[in-house]
Length: 133
Image: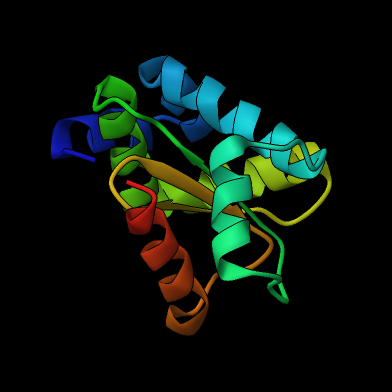
């Protein structure tokens, strides 16, 4: 997140409302993937990843966007900033009633998991994602 945007977000009392105001498309996307994760809704890219990596001892769901657009940039800004990522994880975890952890992965993919992933856990997912490109 650039300094101007961070200033707008963190100098107000309701940081989440400001994030929602500045990044409406990203907010909607994160809400959709959070609900889909919580409901175990299938996704073609996620299914292909799971076919490559096999059964994992943790829950995750990965979706891929084919285009490089403003949403991709906004997700990178929001999830790349530790404070906004933690705010979003806390809010959406409470919304769906289970722990959610968000990451960007590959080029335009979004990863939701049940815990903060380790290198050993995420590397096979990353390798599968680039294989599908």
